[in-house]
Image (cartoon, rainbow, N blue to C red; front, top):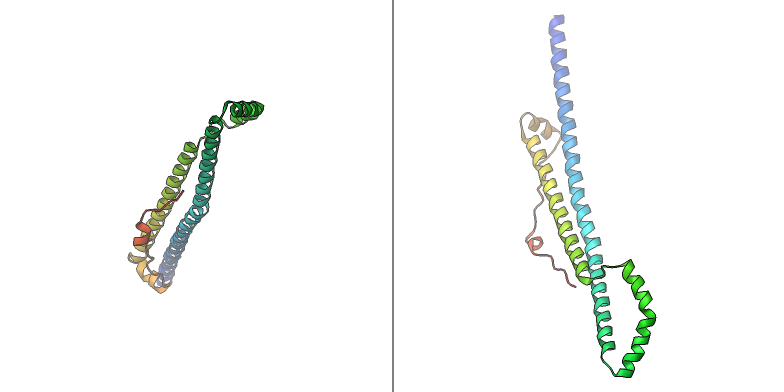
Length: 179
């Protein structure tokens, strides 16, 4: 009789241990899916904060460079007297220009545009990675709660399949960056 009771206690203890392990696994996978979804939100927030600012900086620098070029062209066209006066002004400011050039030797709009392109590509790559990571987490979670005997316990705990991240038709269109 004691052996039967001991056997029942061992079986109940094993079942309890298995249920605890399964429960903790469900919790772990659910939290991982929530974290992955948060990663998508973070990357989208990063895109919304970063890209407009980078575009504005790029626009501003391109405008600055265009205005500077126009001023130089304007200064070069004129009478000899005007050119002489402008030459004196330019000579006075050469030291300032040289100091600026030494501090910022590669001030060129094309580099700013290249940096914008790199940031755009990097941001979109990070968003794509976050989406894929989320879908991988969902796939793992869904597989776990659908497998026997997990499905029995998952149903008792009311765990349902999570939805994959799906891109709407609108989101499949190319993002337009206007400079």
